[in-house]
Image (cartoon, rainbow over all chains, first blue to last red):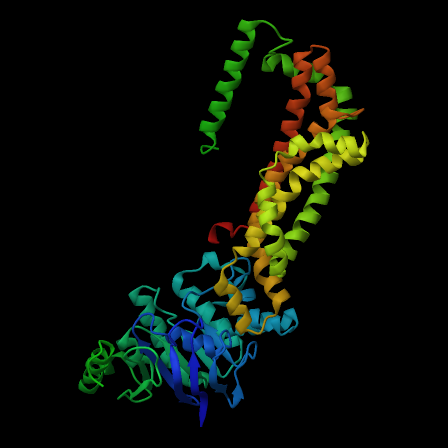
Amino acid sequence: MAIVEFSNVTFRYHPEEEPILEDFSFSVERGEFVSIIGQSGCGKSTLFRLLTGLETPQKGEIRINGKPVQKGSHLSSLQPQKDLLFPWFTVWENVALPLSLQRIPKGKQRQAAEAVLAQVGLDPSLAEKYPSALSGGMRQRVAFARTLLDGAQVLLLDEPFSALDCLTRMDLQEWLRDNWLKLEKTILFITHDVEEALFLSQEVAVLQGKKPFSAALMRQVPLPKERSRAHLACEAVEREKLYLMDVLKGGAR
Amino acid sequence: MKKNLPACLTAVGFFVLWQVVADCIGAAYILPGPKEILIRLWELREPLFLVHLPATMKVTFLGLAISVVLGLGLAIAMDQCPPLERALYPLIVASQTIPTTALAPLFILWFGYGMGSKVLVTILMTFFPISITVFDGLKGTKREMEELLMTYGAGRWEIFWKCKAPAALPSFFSAMKMAIPLSVIGAAIAEWLGAQEGLGYFSKRMMTQLDGAGVFAPIVLLSVVAMAVVAVLNAVERRLIPWRKEL
């Protein structure tokens, strides 16, 4: 059953501009891990802005879990490209931000924040520190903990690892891959990196060609759910990688 | 300390040069040296510290407190209500070109020699810088942070308290550091124009007596008070917003 559905959505930022999406339909099944790839500026992040209700389509409907997405409907959890930790809050206050907005008592917020910090592999003793005391990788984990604590079934991760160094990025990719099944969440993951998309997801959605988009090219990743980085070297994945790169360059369809 | 050494050395050099020039001129009623000013400050300590300093501080802090309340109120109102921003912000920015000190005599003319007119002059000097600086701070919040809060279901006031207000704190402190010396200047100008007490009044009285060191003594006192308050504010700022550099 589809948990995320775009039905004939048309969207443009300004009335005088060319639409980014026109009669765009797209769906994601419950519990899936789907990566969205496409060239820079093609409108990948726009999909997330529409899913979070930050933008409203001019036509069509977007549903999450069967409910229509509206401004302030809060049906998904977004992790933006930058970690966007609030420097004036401690680590636990940052993590518990979604709970504080739900007026949950401070004691419970703190407990939940420490539990989810442990879940993302961070020492709960970091709870009292300020974000400035953390490394880039730790900050991303804290941001991910905040996204998890938001409690939505659908997680929207917008290039969360793009600003990290290679080793930290690989470490976090593996952590996310290992934990996705335990988390029982549906994940939509925007990336520029074809290899990252193949390693992390079950399915890759490609925004290809020129705007406006009316559909995404959906490609199954030829790998089992349980996988390691070594799987990326297999011939089927190599072939898929070359195909996707070709599609991104505007070649194969 | 090492960081401040060049500034300290420059200041010491300035005072030494001033003393040398004052000694060469040898007319303390026109240009007293720092040494003569300090001696006069000590001689006049009773009227200065017990009568005139409290009077000026009363005007300064009352004017500043009202300015902070009004300035913050206007900044928040403009931030929350875009039509109000469009109606007032350009006028407030344009009003900064008016030499407010030149308007001070009008307040004395309208409201007399009482405390009210002096407080009004102080407010006039400090209200606009506070409102503009704090408003700019509120507007300078990262849009992505506000949007992230929106995705969590935050409303307008939740965004204000969780994001805009803390992000504008550095601007508030900058505004205060600007407003404190301005409020002291405002109070002193109002007292020069007409008063029975206060450091501005005292300085003017010393001028009529051709007491150069007596003119400088209250100025030194005013400067020291303003610097001390700004130093306290700096310490509070460092403690309250250690994350300032992260913005």
